[in-house]
Image (cartoon, rainbow, N blue to C red; front, side, top):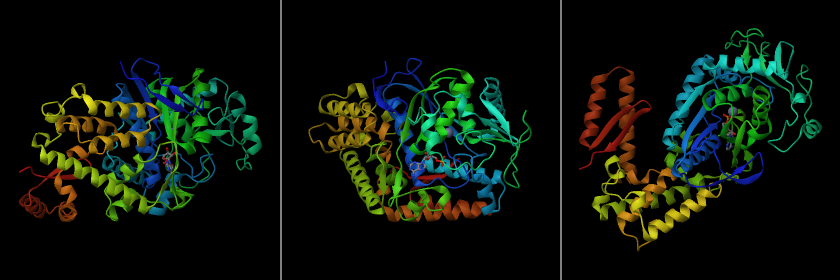
Length: 489
Ligand code: AMP
Ligand code: ZN
């Protein structure tokens, strides 16, 4: 039996006991990136929050199926259908085809996730590979009488949806009053949105598909409805995203999905992460004013310093970014790593946490953790159970590290368990990670080796591998690039 927890549901505006639709199985959909630019660290905060949610659910004993989309078509610079297609804009600025742009940034995105110890979603789906699913869904919405055609496009008619706006708590009448000037003259209501475009406002639209309404491309909102239902069913448990998605994207997703299926509610729990803010202004990809994970790495930070920084704030509180705050997070994380290394050095039986140790050969399994360590684990769990209070859980983790009365195996076992949620990977760090000079040298050599391989100079690449080996460093080539570790002596 999974353990109980409560989550704040945007739909009902309250903390609710979490009860999945199907026993202990949880369907979780997290809106993914639009791949026309690098993710900024604000986006990454949201993905870290969603990772903490998935990890917590697993830690509590649920079987999670997480689906994430990748938007590689049809997301305009304005969420409400105005503006320019983000993919086209990126392609023009970078003189590449939209397909090349998407492929490049998709790879960069998954590299960021890996560097941040974000667990891979179980299913990653590309919008361009699901066009037929979107067409089928639009046909259902059309059949149910919720659409109209105007100016070559198919629109969703919000007037037909009696509870449009329920997610943000604004009903249609209020929305109408506060609406901006209507730019798209085809719309009957400013909140109507496009399900299928045939009349692109932009030249050189190269991503086009045949459809019952003519050759064109889907609107952005329909993508998430179509793909989430394909992989998670017509009703599922949790849908997440950043807070900016409440008023438009998720509101529209709900309206069209419930119009198509006639089933309410489409999604039981809606969870939204608050923004990372930069010097009091919103960080936005389209404004060109944003920091990426590489910016932080270039300044000498480890990606996990950023993860640690994010753990310090509750996901529903805005988080102000500054390099001073990131410095503090870095010292906190290094302090933690050092303490764990010391614990392992003093107790060589705890030397490694790779599979054998985790299987319980040298480190106690969760059931074998008793006494003070078990008490602290319980407090850790209780705080996570109250709408994912990660900052408080992190404080219990620190209590445990500092607690002198706990036997080392117990302490280590409990820390490893807690790290299943926190994802700091501290228990498997090797001492050289605390040696920035070695790290710098090794990374420079790896870069030279990558360059040699790109030139197909495999002789030179092998020489560099040997040179690294003489330093006691072993290289492993993975799909996301080379990884290294210090050979155990
Ligand atoms: P996008 O690629 O624009 O769809 O954004 C990807 C995810 O990042 C979405 O869930 C957004 O809600 C979220 N997001 C955008 N800006 C920020 C920010 N400054 N802080 C936190 N999350 C953000
Ligand atoms: Zn979405």
